[in-house]
Length: 350
Image (cartoon, rainbow, N blue to C red; front, side, top):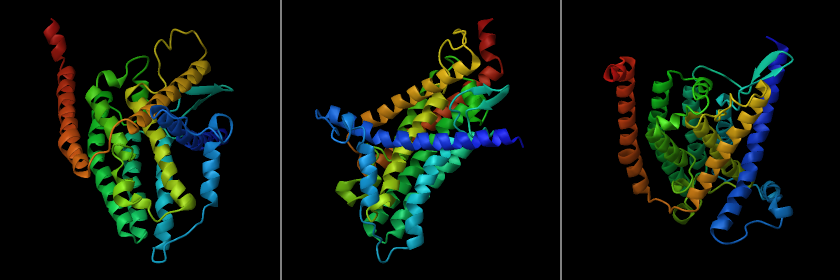
């Protein structure tokens, strides 16, 4: 194996890891600023200019807080819960194409850690593991309120994963590929999947809110009903891992939405600019992060706008609302794909 390729992949992994952590860190500041704007107040403005050092202050506070562990907790699983949640949140970024490719010294390097031909299945697998981190944390705490929060989180995430999976299946049906790189490549220019799969897009976005436990789907950590939810017994950076993973999941979910439905790094008239290959790649990466920023803002906007569901409403909406829509969308997509394959529409135009 070419050592240059290995070094490049290692550097890319480190860059994406650090970028994910920094973006998640400052997403906490952005959310508090946006919440302040919606509620007609200033938000954080004391730590550094415009409050830019507030995330650093929050991190130091979590590191310096008292570290405790319940006496009757399962110590190994208690530590494994937040660690697994944080790990799973970061793993999904491996298959996301963050840009086209860069040509350096005559060699082409893709801005993607792993271009596997089952990238969509990989994302499904990683998302499904995420529920274990929450469930393990709630159970290992030996606290009935934390366990109730963990059970609620597990049932919610499993329920909404079904509709989310079916919404992505329609993308696979129309593109004929499980590779995220191929799915993005087929949306070159303005051939975005959101125009052919609007129902799938709406279902996926709603499920992404539920999967990340964001309001109005934040029942697993609803303070007024279950004290603090599944992480009631956690403190210091163990609690920080749970809270921080939510923002990493939000960042990765926004990247998935942009890649699956809004062309990823593709943008209009990209072939008409007359720029070099590397410059087009750089602009495409900037465009991708602009799309991610928009959907990140959407996550925050919804949180500070809509009220929280009751738990029965949340489960009913998942099973009786989103799931039937996802199934209907899948059937309609399959039917139209079959008609296109058999040249039915060409026959009508004759």
